[in-house]
Amino acid sequence: MNDSIVIIPTYNEKENIEAIIRKVFSLKKSFDILVVEDNSPDGTADIIKTLMKEFPEQLHIEERKGKLGLGTAYIHGFKWSLERGYDYIFEMDADFSHNPEDLERLYNATAVEGNDVAIGSRYITGVNVVNWPMGRVLMSYYASAYVRLITGLSIRDTTAGFMCYKADVLRNIGLDKIKFIGYAFQIEMKFTSVKMGYKVIEVPIIFTDRTLGESKMSSSIFKEAIFGVMKLRFKKIPKISS
Image (tube, rainbow, N blue to C red):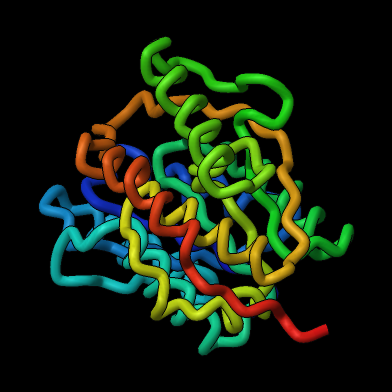
């Protein structure tokens, strides 16, 4: 077993899933992968199970009964990974919007440089987004600015979904108390990590919009992020003991 595992939630990702798995396994640094599969009708799970015969020690799947939300998929994956003793637990999309080669940079930011949480950040060095329409870029960028204003966070990319957590962060964060399921989930996890006193760093990445498959973004997910941050201001979060 490796010390690191990459959690990839999937729903209808047959166009991307094999390529992303093979790319992760081709990296110099060795990672395991857990796919949290939400009963995709397009046969995504069948592709993963075929690949598991080729990578029986590194590739794992957890199948759920339906499309239950990004946040619950990651929490399911976090708990699964903690039970199996992984030290570094990653979030990554299946659609190549996150470059798998950047996994090694997030790993180094935690395992080598000593940070507790590493964020693959689109906005820490400007706006590093490729193939998004300008309206979506502005929406995302100013949503993060709004989150910083409301919560007091200094993180530039508050909705980023490319992450590395040290296992202790996830053990102590209170996963059952994380309530949001869309982009607000990503905000809540970062907010909680910072308020607990963990060392969080942003690592600059280039985000490239998917070229295959369909985006899972919806207006309800965006609204949850906008209104959810108001509730975060009043969330009581204990500091980690020094």
